Length: 499
Image 1: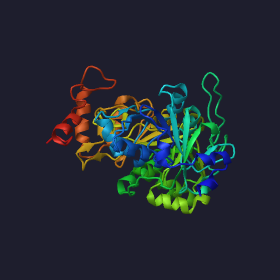
Image 2: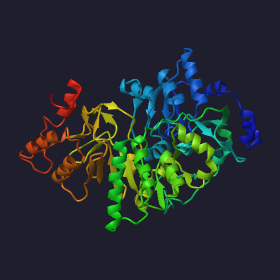
Image 3: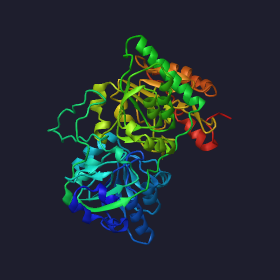
């Protein structure tokens, strides 16, 4: 079966086992791979590398991906100590623990920066690229599977390339991809995308066939993450956003079919986008990074005309649905390289409506989306910054409390800042929505406390703000000795509440 997917005859003699291919990967190498949240990543070869470490071989790698990948990569390489350095985003509990224990050096990065950093050599010389593929063309071009990520840059910069042909991935994926690569400054040209559905590249990633040293057959499916049920809080958040968008249309600030939508990864983001299936909006377009279950719902409901992204990132149920209806969804979906799907130039030109998830935000509109209690990495920034700063509208969502009410997601000051007040236009919880446009810091504080805070914490926030406002400086009032006291109290007592 694998031979049928290798259309260049002289490459068929490169077919070998994962164990054999893994021997090309040596201690100290920089390995760049396919994969994006967690779809289209290599599986057999990373598992074979991890097995070498389990057998006592000393091997440590720098690992660069497009975004998060499955347990066959991040989990296996973290558990065995192979992964020593990691860029730029992850969601695996074993890699997360290794990062927080200081065993893996991790740089959290804007995803749109990764391709250029690879091209410029900032992340080190790429010794080996390991990429999952659907097939290889007659010219040696590599056809991706369910994501594109940084695969084009990994392949073009690597000394050698290992290809995993994943026979579990349906051939109907072919033709869904649009591969376009930018030049380095000062020779970079404008990206010729003026609408979400524009196709500007090829359906395969160009590759010098001489670079390919191994081709491995794999039939392991993407280890996709489950999506939580659309609960009442998520429905309320979605309802607040839809009501807000309807108002923006009514007053003439948005067209009837809105502007291209971007939605982050995860259960809340999926629920927020899913709420649009019951809305009155029609002929929607999406220019985003991940295409999740709710996008399939919108397509099936006839609401979406095109969905441009970097990966197909469904739940386990969504993956089954996708495979059974791939030909149908392929008519609506385009998969692009990360540097194009998350490109700030394109996001600004199209006027994207960005909807992303926060861990917490403070009364002045600063957002923390990465570090719990300021120190413990959760997943990473992902693409939220790429879209937030360049969006027509930037929206952040979160439920108002966590840990059974012991944590307030609205705090006097965030414990870590990923998105400043300058980039955040709207914040939403199940309690309500605060439109922060055209407001001073003190006006923002009043809106956020009144509209977004949980009733259990609203009096505490009002008290803090009123006492802070009595200080000498009135622009963005804080009591510095107390501004992070809520986090300190939780770490000491297990609750932000005053007992």
